[in-house]
Image 1: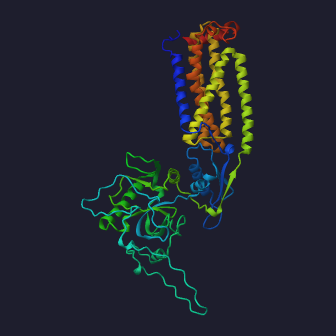
Image 2 (image 1 turned 120 degrees about the horizontal axis):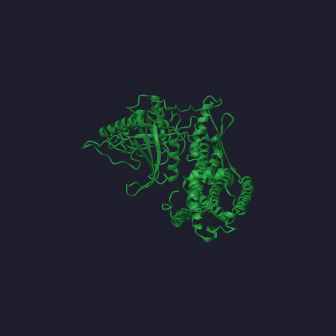
Image 3 (image 1 turned 60 degrees about the horizontal axis):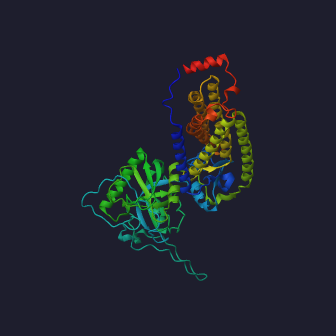
Amino acid sequence: MASSNRNVPNPVRTLVAFFAVLGVLTAVMFLQGSPVPKLGLDLAGGTTITMTAQTESGKNAPADQMDQAVKIIRERVSGNGLNDAEVTKQGDNVIVVSVPGDREDQQQIIELVGTTAQLQFRQVLVSGFGGGDAPDEEQPAVTPSGPATPAPTGAPSASPTDKNRALSSGLAAAPTETPAPTATPAGAPSPAVTEPDPAEADEDFSAVTDKAVIQKYLKTVCPKKGAKVDGADDPNAQYVVACEEDGSYKYILGPVAVPGTEVKEANVSAPNAQTGQTGWEVVLTFKKNGTTAFGELTKKANAAYLTNPMSPEAQIAIVLDGRVVSAPQISNGAILGGTASISGGADFTQAYADNLAEVLKYGALPLQFPEDKQTVSQISSNLGADQLRGGLIAGAIGLGLVVFYCLWYYRALGFVAVASLIVATAVTYVLVVILGENANFRVSLPHIIGLIVSIGITADSFIVYFERLRDELRLGRPLRSSVENAWRRARRTIIVADAVTMLAGLVLYFLAVGGVRGFAFAMALTTLIDLIVVFFFTKPLVALLARMPFFSKGHPWSGLDTSQLHKPTPTAFRAAKRLEA
């Protein structure tokens, strides 16, 4: 026997709940920013960066390293896969990166994709003023954080400086640049060039056994910003000379204690007044071996602090691509929890933190891409706009044919299909705008193609349900019971069909790149929306209309007039009975 309809949901409540949720999403769309979708590279234009790899031998870069570089850069610029960025390899040494955006984003994009991201943690052995800009409290600084072993009671303390350094008396007088030599009279002997004498320097070089490194340190005058000392990023060097990013300090650093490959996660943490966090931070989580190595490094630095709070060896330098991001002092015990946070001052903005986290998260580039071998150009959206116009015309024609067919074949019932298509379009638009603001989703031509294709998928769901409903009416059942019986039979088919489409879209999304990936995402999104609309709008609306005499009495224009429906064959009648039993 047919099941009872006592447990059927109230269609009015379902429709009210559906439109309430849609109203909330619409409010979110207007409150979060512009209620207009973000456009992709082909519709809004953008920036193209052509980068040429450089090898030490000057030969072509190995294919496997180029492929790895393409993969890392692609993950950096489109980590969530929704911003319509494109990364392709051309020839043997060239990588082309195309990202939606304007000229204001160029430098940010170049820094993001071109950074080699060789992260190193080294102990500071010697430190001094670099001869560049004076220390500035507004420059970014980095401080490890996490569970720490408490310092013993009565341990000496020191007041750290603006960059978490306890400066010794040896740093009281900053080294100055050597003055330019005066002109020498013709024929006069040239003055002898003497090497700097470490004994005359204020710094303590007892922890450094390589005299060549000491001489290099004494000669080094840090650039004011951006450049690095030659060899500062050499992972195999026992000692390196490195400068702070702003040129304010220079260092002699010990061997690499924790390489960047031991970083497991890098996430951005927003300011939080409740926890006392006043600025943006990048929180690093180390792998198992990295946790152990970082704990030993901080234990060693903390021991140096307990022996002499002014010792440079109490500092740990965090080196990124040969530049010291910061050198915090470990004064509160060893950090054994496997975490460290990179934070800073006014220059450490959300954009800076996001970029740094992306670079550290996806790893180091295996090749160098010098800035002097990079070219930047702008992409016009004119061609994409023409293609969009043609695509929208094609979509409008297709939608018009679907609407015409529904109204011609299903008559008044066809308006349910038209209303469902309108609602599905509204839901899609709202979600696209929300995803644009929160996931950087940008609508491109492949996305629009996927949305147009979904019109047919959505119409299929309505047709399956309507045909099941008409089959029930052919068997002589009343409309209200036919609505529920037809839904129980149709929803299986709808779910299976949409599940297959969804599965195809997901597989295509994870295996493809570029425009094909965008098409797959749009198709999967609209398939999910189709299920939501059919379950929470189309079916409840049909159940509500079944209570109206115009439909329940089978008006000729209702589309449910049994006199106009063909009688079922005996085979179909027996099949229906088996389903009913």
